[in-house]
Image (tube, rainbow, N blue to C red; front, side, top):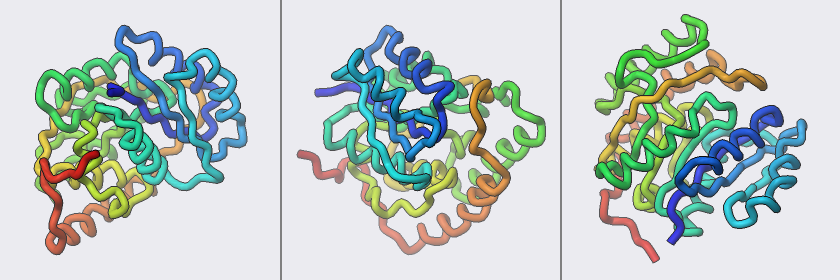
Length: 250
């Protein structure tokens, strides 16, 4: 069986992609990487393909045409990882805002500490964000508070995008019913995992704003999260969620 794969969605990450790949592959534990590139005009995909020969069994790429959304990128990656029988499936950004070393902590939370979903949390032990403008920190922090209040999830960082899933979680969730494509996707995945009865653990991390490349975050993304969560909660009253242990595996 394969153990862990890190899914990295990319759009114009030529400054970071090779560095992040090598940083993950330099870790003392062996991880595989799946890059989902949305037609980056800056040549990100070509950089990945250029170093695949160095890591033929560990580095994979799926190229898509155009910006199709963060959520659909991860869903594509999840389905690929399930098909290839990876035990632990990670989400991580390409821009070093997520420290590759923290992959080890997320993996341990699932493998050793009983979590089905481990979240790299910016807010579980205070506010651990570096180089963000104060307005953006406050927007993110209070958006997470709001989501927690509406959904009832006991999660401090509800919008976090640095995560590790056990494969069973993604096999149980009906991935085709995940509605959101932007950053509200992160909330919907956590909420669905929670409603399916899986164990969720937050692992404290320090989030560092990107040094290279251009951020894809904006106020509209947070607006989607704030208003989308109301629809998410409302729909949950009329939906039956499959429960942990009900996944049909091969």
